[in-house]
Length: 147
Length: 366
Image 1: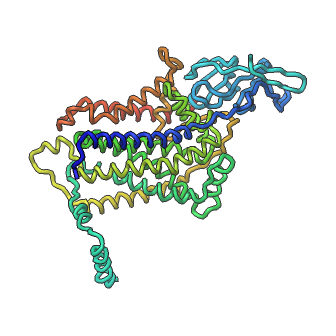
Image 2: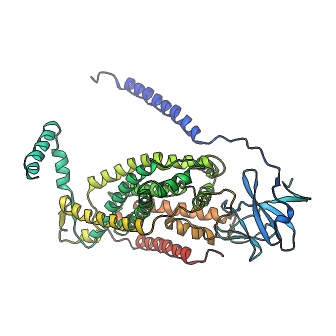
């Protein structure tokens, strides 16, 4: 059986080995790419018109609205000023809420606190909430991104 | 009945023996012994974990018969299982409770192996497969938690996947692969379902087979201080002596499970709403509690890094350290006492216990 000289056997093994390696790569590459979800081109939301009137939200309260696929938070400050922020906590992605007892924006997940300007004031959040422009025109509230 | 035992069973065995050589299998069972010493009690927890795992497989298969993995139907299908399907509440409750008990027995098993230095040479690979099984079990818990698509699960998944996203360089890619997109949506639910019922079962079957094969090959480890004792260590046959004792433990576990499922049925909560704020008092399952509490305490920035990045890196290093203990602990490898690693173990355990307790005792922030 072992009549083939070693160099030839080594060459054959190299060929077999590398074609097996190539086969593996050609099988695993599509699988790896398949696992990464395609980037769906979402229409980037620049502004939304809320289905509420400015009078619907009493002072010292807040409400979540849809800003495209993301939640936003509209608050009416105790002094009666409307402000809007992204409701996505900058710490780990939870959705924040307005707390009327402390007059602050609070994330229940890890006890992050923001003031009424969306600035992170205590707890783990590393950055302020993104703030939006609010236009209250007659019966409509329009929220838009800052340029 | 007597006839069955006297005639049918021996004939059946003879029928098989004529066709398959069972001698090897018999020898395998005959040779397995369990050492008897003051730490023998810890030998029961591996088998107990295996028993609870088999309950997970059985109840999991039953749940799949009614469960529907989509954002529109998942919550309703679990509600249907619990309110309409006969004994559906029981099957789902047992699945949830057994998952928790399994993680608990797994942790006891892991730490008992750690403190009796059973990871030492030649059992390094067994320890590594055990740590892999622990990781798979935690991932099972995390992925299964989302499937009922309730508020708690929704935010737990947001936070958990965002934590994975904090890993430097590859974090965002991991996050997108886990979420099947940039946000937690119905696509995430499909993916977690696939992970929970296809990918992880395959992974656990392979890893568990290797783990059990190695345990069988190498026999039970005896703690070094007992092994050093010149008196020989007595042992009992695994079959039937230890096996019957195991069985008593399993029956007790089954009784505890049934009682928990009947008296404290697992709640379903409120359907997930991506446009509702995270509810007050939100918290993860108990086995992630110490991590959750740590993330609460970490400040926004530590040096040049964000607080949560430091936390995630620290936990990754901790896990890596535990996995590599057999290779780091040279004293244990020589069969000596290893006080340093003993106290590190106590430190890790104390950290987990104290932080978890703080998580439950500290007010939810309100």
